[in-house]
Amino acid sequence: MGSLSAGQVGIVGISTGGLLAGPAAGSVTITPSGSDAFVPDPHLDGCLVLPDKAVCSLTSLSAPGSLTRFIKVQPGSGASVPLHLVYDGAGVPKPDREHELSVPVDGGSLRAKYATEGPVTVAAAGANVVTCAAAAVGCTDAQHRMGPNQRNNGWPLVYVDDDGDPSTFDSAAATLALPAGAVPIHAELVWGGSVAGGSGGLPAPSLADLGAVVLRGPNGASVPVVGDVELSTTHPGDYQVSADITGLVTVGGQYRVSNVQTGTGESAFGGWSLQVVVSSPSLPVRVASILVGSSDAPGSGGSRSLPLGGFAASGVGAQITITSWEGDPGFGTETASAFGAPLVNADNPFGDIANSSIVGQSGMNGWGFDLDQFDLSGLPDPSGRALALTGSQDEWTVGAVAVVVPRAEP
Image (tube, rainbow, N blue to C red):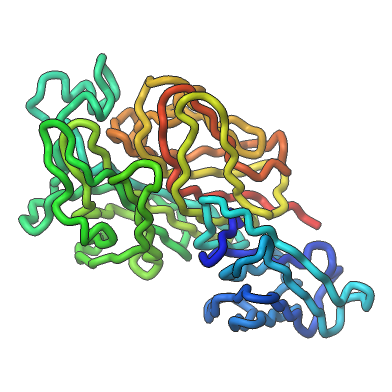
């Protein structure tokens, strides 16, 4: 899923596909080679995952809607991760009981942190943590992405800090809406911004605390969250952090994130996104994955393609959710497409995808922070498993992508 990079944990999906014609007994053992190693995972249904092998029950893999297991792997120094599969048990024809697979290590920037298969979808919420000063002339229009000056480099931006808590310097809330009857099974919190202070502002308060924020959920309790920090290699001072907060997200409602380390002033930006995989018996069987990384979109012409995964997709009902940074409304032309379909919606017209829009806050200005969700009713090219980006002027950065795709039945 996504990309694999040497020394960094990623995910590979192992599917029985059409191999099991019906209920099967026994197991399949998957063994990595050389310096590659699996990451032990005590929560993977039907599998025992150890560093040197994974043993999965064929009974669980032959159940309806349960054909795939996603195993965390840390590649070594090779150009690929070779895998040896051995089936032991009834229900698998003898000629098919041993397989050799090779998963390329492509060094791409978007790495899978979570993947699953089942009756699932993704719900998302997020907020920007800087804005124009409310008393400034034209600020109200700009906050609604109206007027002549809507870009973050045209205002001395200040913190959003609406929690009334003197222990926080910024704080912003958003409402997570869940489908009726849906239960969260994974939650990924992503936050980031630019620590540099622009004209009329100051740098972030503490570079040592980039990886720490405070989360307050619907129950009103404030909880510290620590995540994995990734510094931009192309834009000094920009950063992103991701954290698995599954145990902290059990219901929908208002979530608030505080103390996101960002600077203020002109060209400041910062925010947070929450992407939650939820399960419900009323949903179709789909493959969902959450990918994180830092990948610049082309800002002066050209294109870039980001691998999304190796799943087999059917032709209808995909969903793509993108967290991105430093996009400006109406500045140049930038596009994104997935599976051959352009990503557009009411808040993201064609040619202006990185326009500081936030799902659930239609028409509002994210001031260089985007959280956008796209529903695709059909996939012109189900085999085109990549996020294709183009740009003419606005240089923006993709930070996280959640992908939901109906599984292609064997």
